[in-house]
Length: 75
Image (cartoon, rainbow, N blue to C red; front, top):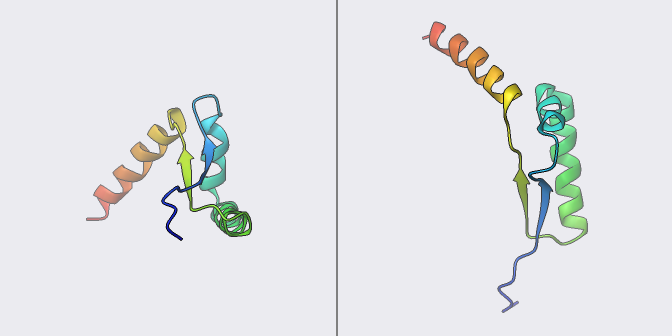
């Protein structure tokens, strides 16, 4: 196809609560379910890609602090 237009599905955004994404990625099973169902949806509806707009504030800073300390201790 010579058409260069790409259509992306966007999830999240400025007004979307980032806590929902934080809760989803905290658990391996829910993260895998999100990835699998998102890919299926993208293929079924012929999207070219995904724009995941996750404005991560408090939960991310907590996780970064928690896990960066554990990585430093394991070196």
